[in-house]
Image (tube, rainbow over all chains, first blue to last red; front, side):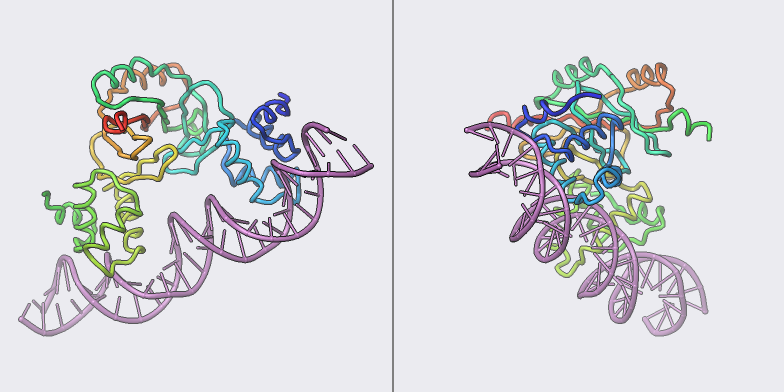
Length: 135
Length: 135
DNA sequence: TATTAAAAGATAATTATTATCCTTTAAGTT
DNA sequence: AACTTAAAGGATAATAATTATCTTTTAATA
């Protein structure tokens, strides 16, 4: 388990127990919806306010400490910011997986043949995870 | 301008003036948020209810007559369903453009090296459109 | 340990979306 | 062309999601 205290401080965020727990949940779970995060957090801090979840998620988003991932036909999930990657979303169980895909060639080609300037890409593949293919 | 009357009926949707106007707006504009669609529709039907917009958008989504496109850091837009394609979103002016990108090779490669089964892909490139690069 | 700005918690307010209920109408039938 | 009826529209209440406000608590630093 990583010590996020310093990392939070570097982002000018106080290392409160609630925040450390949120980062820990994100680290352990990988991807989580607001709703699920709140449920998990209530177990750890029985009087935590939903507003605290939202305020922290928004602050962390502003600091690029975390990222929102918009999933087709499902609620957004949040993840700790890491190197550029894409996502797989299982349509049945909702599981989200990180996948490393090199899109450089494609993006360069698109940039070459269009007038816009590309800064970032968001790719989500949807389908069935291994488990849901069987059951 | 396309006649959507029959197309709506084929989807078991009555061809009401409101619906024809919504499809026309989608056809002309390409991509539009709920909010903007409502504003445009109020000009055409001054007593139209926002509920009518939502009900129709949801019905059309269920019928796969239209699609929702989730845009990072922005509101979702809706578009008439067409052949598979990706999107470019201008971070400054919010303009959305369709782009044709062949992702088959990439998707096949990802499928080959992973355990999940891929059914669809959603790719949004973000950056600056031609106009916003200059201004 | 004292100070203070930031954060937490409680909850009100706002925004987005859906549900309900009554009226109107598209589309098929006579 | 009038008749019938299920579907759709409009008004608005209800719910869900998110943000704002205000008071209390606490992390960080002196």
